[in-house]
Length: 273
Image (cartoon, rainbow, N blue to C red; front, side, top):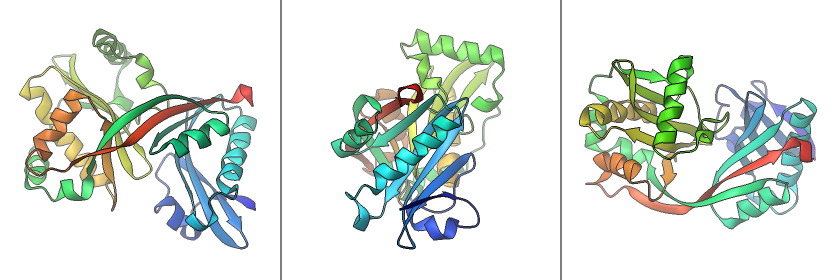
C-alpha cells in the first residue's frame, strides 16, 4: 500500500472516495493499492488541532487494514508536524467507535441523532419562501467576531448551561457559524460545521422571539442551498428541543425528520503516540 497527498493534480483519481473536490481549508491523504485508489481521508487544521473530517475506504477493500494504515500514516504526519490533538466527529454505529478506539482515540460521547435530508428539504415549498426572504443585517459570522463579542458569547453559553469547549478549534466552522447581534448584544447563535457531506448543527440559541429566530432560519436556508450536495443531510443530536423546533418550522408538514444512529466525539492526544 502507498500513501499519497490528494491535491488538484490527482483529485479526479480520488473523487469517488472524497465525494468530489476537497473543501477549502482541508487537506487530503489517499491510499493506492495495485495502482488503484482505495481509500481517502480529509482533514482540517486550526490552532494546533487537526480534525478528521472524512474517511472512506472502498467497500471491496474493507477489513483488510487499509483504513488503519491510512489513519496511522495521517496521525504520524500530523504528530511530526507538531500538531497537539486530532479530533473526530462521527455518525453511525459502534463499528466506528471501535475503529477510533483501536487507533488510540478517546471516544467521549455517544448520542442519538436526528437528520433531515437536504434534497427533500430544498424541495419543500416553505424552504424557498424562507430563502427568498431578505437576509438580516444583524448576522455576524464567528470568523468576524470582535474579542468583546467572543467573550459575550462564552458568557451566554455558560449562562445557558453549555460547555465553552463547543467553541474549541475543530468543533465548529467559524465561516458557517454565526450570531445575531442587536443593539450590541448577542441575541442568538447557530454553531455548526461540515462533516463530510453533512451539515452538523451543534447548537442553536435564541431569545425565543420570532425576530431572533427568523434571521437564523433565513441564514441556514442559504447555507443549505450553497453547501448541500446529493445525499447531504442536516444532522443534530436528538432531544435538543430548540433545534427540533427550529427544523420543525420547515419540516413539520412534510415529515422529513428521521431518527439516525448514534454519533460521537473522539479525541487523540498526539503526545500519547
